[in-house]
Amino acid sequence: MVNIIVVLPKPEEGKGIRNLLMKNGFRVDGVCTTGSQALGRMDDLSGGIVICSYRLSDMMYSDLHACLPQGFEMLLIASANTLQDCDCRDIMSLSMPLKVHDLINTVDMMAQAIERRKRRARQVPKERSAEEEGVIQEAKELLMNRNHMTEQEAHRYLQKCSMDSGTNIVEEARMVLVMMRT
Image 1 (tube, rainbow, N blue to C red):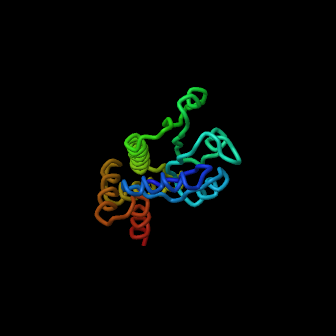
Image 2 (image 1 turned 120 degrees about the vertical axis):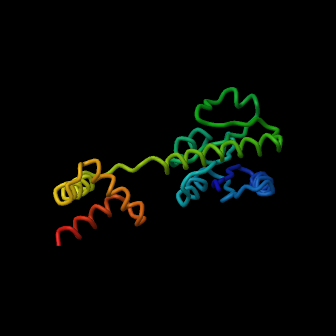
Image 3 (image 1 turned 90 degrees about the vertical axis):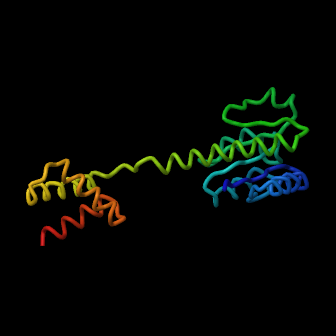
């Protein structure tokens, strides 16, 4: 579930949007009246959506956008005339007066995009350090010398053992080294 923070200068408007989002199945992590409050709230979260107005009591939307931690996206709510003058690159926007349907669909679309990016990021294989590569290579060489395997066979053996035991290939290579050296 995506984190949502509502930042509007009037607390009653923020609470109204929070209630609307919550009725439609979204979790709202906070309602703030200033940009600095919102930034403080974001420190505890790992990404999400910030719904804010054009002008806050302590900063403009652009200042808040420039300070957003990685993983956060902004949904700017302002009048149609104000939105025409805004630099809205990398910012979603909705014009006032808000239509409930538009707000819900936009937040849902943003949340789905964030979730897709998180899933893709988890699927990217992590880079191995030089030390880890060395451990794998050493284990393969040991398997090649002792068991007369090719490098490809040794690598496949390590992969299969790691999959069977539920460990990563580096841990499996370390276990092979410990077991075969004794």
